[in-house]
Length: 98
Image (cartoon, rainbow, N blue to C red):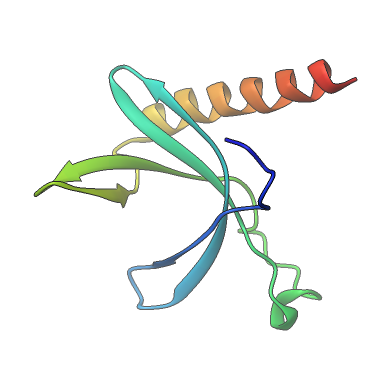
């Protein structure tokens, strides 16, 4: 994904009805399933917040009724495997830039 036009942001709604703005980081395929990684976007209200849940957010892409929807992962094992792939990908990109 080209960053010529700046970062890509999406807004998702959690199970409690709270809207969360996420910044797209990367996408990859694992075992035939597409996954996307995001970082929570900082808002002015949250700049001084020490929230522990500000790490990498991984969602899988599900095709339903001709639309692409984002969903949480089904298991901790799936999350761990995909997280490791994203971290490897992100850090390999940094090493190539040096």
